[in-house]
Amino acid sequence: MNHLDEQSINALRVLSADAIEKAKSGHPGLPLGCAPMAYELFAHQMKHNPASPDWFNRDRFILSAGHGSMLLYSLLYLFGYGKEGKPELTLSDLQNFRQLHSKCAGHPEYGHIAGIEATTGPLGAGMGMAVGMAIAE
Image (cartoon, rainbow, N blue to C red):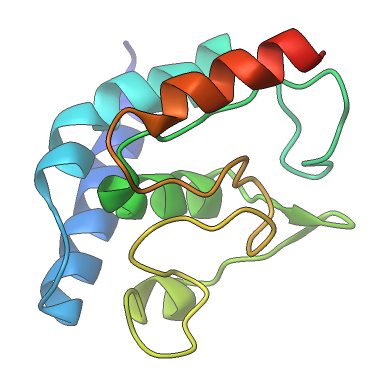
C-alpha cells in the first residue's frame, strides 16, 4: 500500500465520520472499519468506470449492510461516479447525509445516485441480491 492509498483510506474515514457526526445520526463502525477493504476493491480489484456507471461488464459492489451507506457515498464521491462523465455527488451532498430530500439517504437506494447497484437495508439481503445479479448475467 502506498502513501496515496493510505491518504485515500483516511479520506474515506474522515468524510464518513464527519457526515455522520453532522447528521447526529448514522452508523460509523462500518465506514471506519471497512474503508481499507472497500478502497482496495474500488481502486485495485473491481472492473468499473465511474464515468460510465451503467457499463454492462462492470463488477458490482453491493453494500449488504445498508446502514453503513456513508462508506458507499464516500467511495462514489472520491472515485467521481456520475453520468455523462460528470461527478454526481458533491461535498455538500455528503454534508447533507440523512437530511430530508438529500441525495445521501440513510440506506442506499438503487437508481437514486450513479453507482448504487441495489437498495439495501435488511442485514444479509445483499448476498441474495448479488447472487441473483451474477446468475442473471
